[in-house]
Image (cartoon, rainbow, N blue to C red; front, side, top):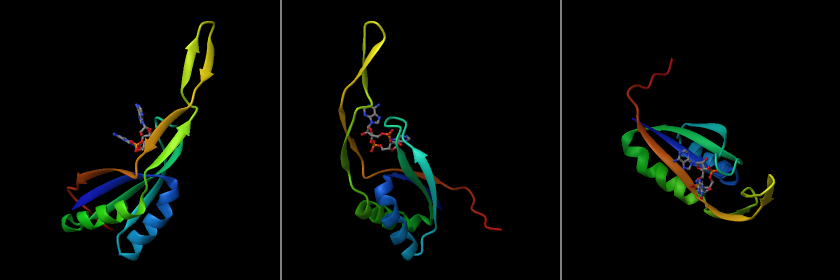
Length: 108
Ligand code: 2BA
């Protein structure tokens, strides 16, 4: 068994969860925050059998879009402790996915 951890953009989370649950996958949704942008995103835990992993990849790929975001989060430090914000363009991925081997899965 595998645990798929998928970090996705909030805008994509609803459709993705709906399709996963429609296809009988079990999903846990966590509200998370990206360390770089310090903006909200969504982390999903999806526990699946080994032979279902590829199907879940496909569902994630179909539901998650890459977006260009312009942020003024970055700052330039000037002499005299002055911070000037400047815009930075980042491409936030469709999804960041980690796959872990699960030693044991118990449902009481
Ligand atoms: P954030 O950390 O807020 O990052 C948002 C986007 O900013 C990233 O998109 C990337 O394009 C850019 N970015 C992140 N760190 C950067 C850096 N040090 N320098 C320049 N640009 C940087 P994604 O790579 O698609 O990541 C989207 C979200 O997925 C991240 O939000 C974070 O919450 C999570 N994530 C990505 N890689 C991760 C990893 N290796 N471990 C844990 N979480 C990760």
